[in-house]
Length: 101
Image (cartoon, rainbow, N blue to C red; front, side, top):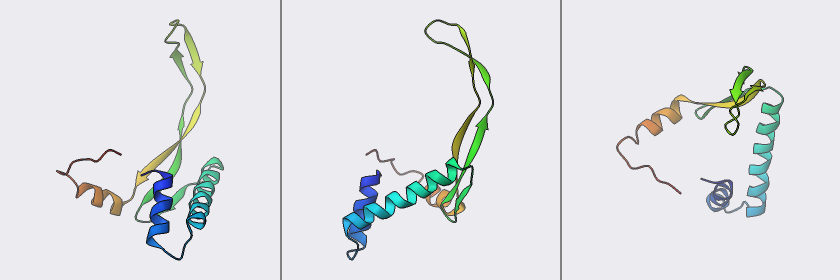
């Protein structure tokens, strides 16, 4: 599901909500989540999952083109851990084909 599909679903499910308002709501939620993660905060949505930052230590990498060793700096990457309800619902789908968009 893409962001635009989520907005369309919200507007369809809640007829009193204009598509423009659904778009604003989704963008506001996503912006708040991005700001929280960028600020080093953890996000927890009960039943869905949690987002946190993981730290990848600096390491020596390799330039694939030249083969030279390159120092790769430390990185912080977002990590999603699904909640129990999400894991159980996804696990219940075992045996059914996975749909691609």
